[in-house]
Length: 245
Image 1 (tube, rainbow, N blue to C red):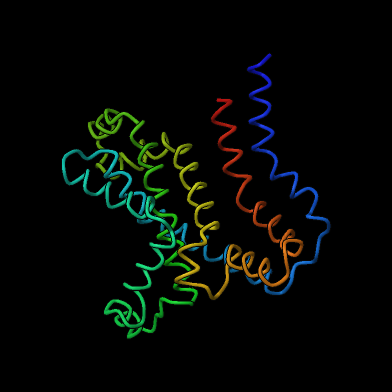
Image 2 (cartoon, rainbow, N blue to C red):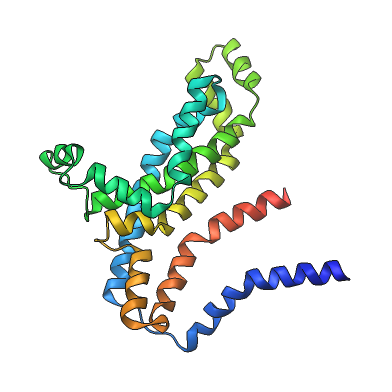
């Protein structure tokens, strides 16, 4: 009885924020034009970031899942550092590296790409926020597929690349889907990096912060609801699906 009461208390504690959303903070207001713009910015920027993350993150996850030795350990440390670093600190460091006064920033500017307070800067910040999460989660999913399956496919005539595409990726698809959904949540929810690097155009987190400062808590509930609607369902469904499998 005591155990059940303790579990109920913890679950009620975790669910308490949802009651605030249900109440609407005392009332709901319509989404403003700026809110709609922030939704578009987050969704379009997040989708573009996911495409880049899949393309560059999956090969890196394969490497980390299969490689051994000091170089692999060093590579994993490099992947982990942005994920473990405080986001405001990472945003400041990115501004130093990619800002208009930095050599790398000037090089991109010469190509017509400005990496501060532009859609390109938003994409850059989102990739830095979400790529490590995807790589680490995807590496775990790929590592669970025995390497012997790939070797068997190679004995049947597949190249190493074909064996990974035909055997490993399909077997790891559920874990890779979970990795991508976590990266999606991380991308859309990032605030600290984007606050420094890409305050404009404002994504949903920055717009929520602006609305709270300018209009108060009551004004943000419609945007909070949209924010949760585009981030929570897929990871929640995948987590429950894995639990029931």
